[in-house]
Amino acid sequence: MSFVPPGTGWPEDPATADTPVALDPADVRRLAATSGTLAELTAGQSVCRACPRLVEWREQVAEVKRRAFADQTYWGRPVPGWGDEQPRILIVGLAPAAHGGNRTGRIFTGDRSGDWLFASLHRTGLAARETSTHAGDGQELIGARVLASVRCAPPANKPTPSEKAACFPWMAREVRLVAPYVRVVVALGGYAWQAVWPALKDAGYELPRSRPPFGHGAEVEVRYAGAPVTLLGCYHPSQQNTFTGRVTAQMLDDVFTKARSLAV
Image (tube, rainbow, N blue to C red; front, side, top):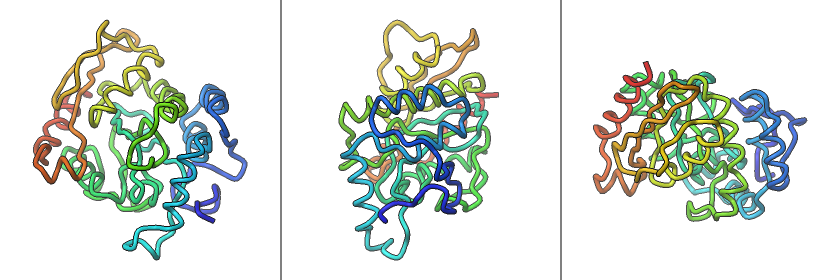
């Protein structure tokens, strides 16, 4: 089998063999809307099969594998949101990496981007450990939660517009469920910045009339239930950005230090 069956003992697997499976976008909308808890929602996210191209790709990657991980079992399923269930800081990315989250079953875990992200979160007091290598490794987020706008690893890291739309209800519902606690939202990259605005609107946030442009260090105040919430832009710690110096460890630390100070 080219993916880990739910409920078979994978660490941190939120689903069981009885978790309802979304087979099309209508199922996603229905199951997301009726998920009353994060546990129920992440279970549904982790078994979704609504996008045929993404299902085929993630499972093909899990079967063929990368040579460096040839002896490992790949998760091969959607990667759900992960972290504190009452987060003060919500961190949003684009999609899992084919040989990162799609392999380990945890968002931003097992790839170079995650190495940079979790090291910064640890330095700024938002993660218990410097590294995040695999589910069940003891890593914990402290007052923070990470999610992706698309839950499956896409070919060439480029989900199609229809795939983004199909996955949106999962993201919107997660944003809504944690909204009472969140005081800062950090968008990792331009696409996450664009994707999070409609999710915030769906969750009942009061937003500016026009959407400000993305930039590293961009800062916008929105409101939820009358309370201020800060949206921060941060360059994505992709290999391209870290190799070229477009984003440095200090730049990441500055964003998350500010996020932590704002979230108090």
